[in-house]
Length: 197
Image (tube, rainbow, N blue to C red; front, side, top):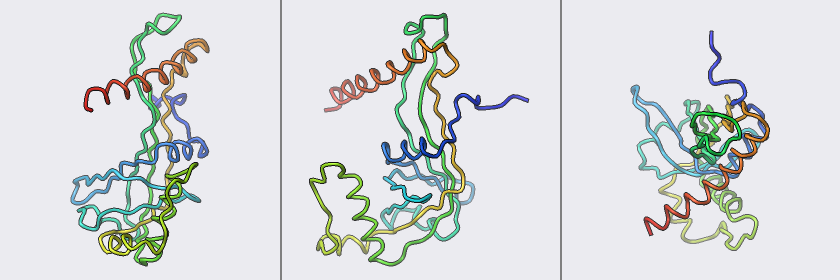
């Protein structure tokens, strides 16, 4: 029987996974209703084995974010095509990436003050390290906004890190693949933005 994905591409170190979540907090949140997936993209903040977030209460997925419902969460890190031309040895083309898959149980947050506090905490985290903006509890716009928001917490029950970074290659080629991941991501962002803006 074949092990898949290969062991060298799995990283179950929670510290590494948490670093991905904190660096790339925009999550893909997946729930299932009647065998159909409902998917939202929203930032989630990690603390003590839990993810906290909120979404528009009119989002169809909101009704599934109730106590003990199961969800899957995906966080995507950097990724890029790896050309054989960067290696010192003969290889085939591949794709390198960092992705985190989590599963968990939802806990409904119904207290409006707790939802407000989670929004304040999220803003503080996302504003770090400069903190040029601070969301205050008594912000009048938040008082209006809160009635349109559903707050929730996810207790993480399963952690899986997928770090495909050419780990099966020679050390020199691993380093080349790492450098290509950095270069390609910086270049692809610039080219994309030049195209759409």
